[in-house]
Image 1 (cartoon, rainbow, N blue to C red):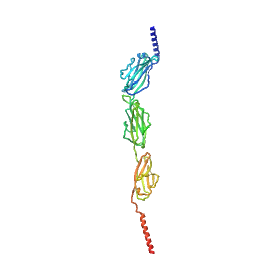
Image 2: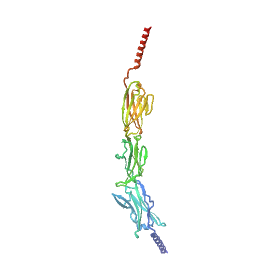
Image 3: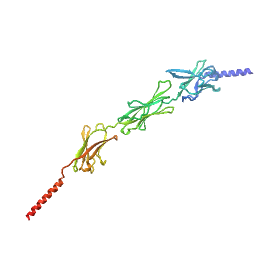
Image 4: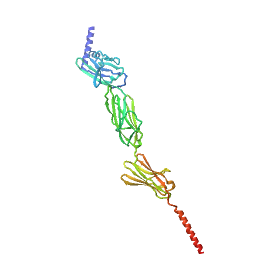
Length: 395
C-alpha cells in the first residue's frame, strides 16, 4: 500500500514537472517599477520564477547588479545559484526563499537592500537558467539613488557664468538678452529648472541633460530663455531656480541695472530787462538714437511747466523746429519780462522709456533803456509853461 502511495506521488510530481517544462520559463520582479531612493533607505526587490522550489534548487536563479565603474560596465552576482546565498554582502543585503505556490507552480525570492549605498545606483537583473535545456530568461529594473544638485549657475548673455547670487548689478543697455541656467550634480537629471525675470517666469527651452564624468551617477541640466530689458525694469533680478527629484532647491540671481544715455543738448541762455517783449530761450537737441516722447520748459522758481504747443499767461509759447539730421530746436518765448522772470529754466525731455533729461538755461537781467515816460513828462511840462508865458504876455 505504501509503495503504491509513493509511486502515485512520484507520478504526480513527474507530471507536474513535465507540464512545467512545456511552459516557457519566466522570471520577473513582483514590483517592476524603478526605485528612486535616498542613501540609507531600505529597498525590497522580491522576484519570482514560474517554476517550483525543486527547479530553484537544481537550476540557476540569480540576482545581478550591473553598474559602470571607471568607465567600464561591472556585473556583481548578488546571489549564488541553487543555495541562494548573499554574495558576501550580508551586512547590506539579505535574501531568502519566500512563498511557494504549488498550484501556480511559482516560487518567490525575497531580496532586500538593508541600506542603500552609492554602489546600489545600478541596474538589478533577475535571471533564471534551465541547466538542462539551456533556456534562459531575465527581467530588470533600475535603482536610482537620489542626489541633490551641487550647484546652479547663471549666465546672462555673454557675461561670465556665476553660481552664487550677486548683489552688484550687471549694467546693460536696454534690449533682449539670452539667459542660461545650468544645474549640476543631481540624480536623476533635474527637469524642474526655471528662469524668472522681474518676478515672472520666462519661457525656456526643454532641459538638455547630460551625464557628468564622475564616479557616481550625476547629471547636468541646461535651459535657456530670453528676457526683454527696459529702463522700467532697472534694479530687478534675473533668477535661476532648480528643484531636483530629491526635493532640494537652489537659487542663483543677479540684479540688472539698465544704462541710461542722454541726448546731446546745447542751450543758449539770454539776457533781458524788465518790460522787454518776446525774449527767447533756445535749446538744440540731437535726437539720434533716442526715442523721445515730449519736450517742455519748467520755470525754476515755481516749477510751472509748459509743453510744446501750449501757451500761458507768463509764457507766449514753446515752439519745436525740425533742423534736419535728427536735430531739433525747442524755443521758449516770453510775452513781456517781469522782474520775477529772471531765473533758471529747465528744458525737460521725457523719453518713451520713462527717463527724463533736464538741461538748464538762464534768463539774466540787464539794464534797460532810460525811462522814456519820465522824459516825456518833463518835456510836456516845459511846453505847457512856455504856452502859459506866451499867453500872459499877450494879455
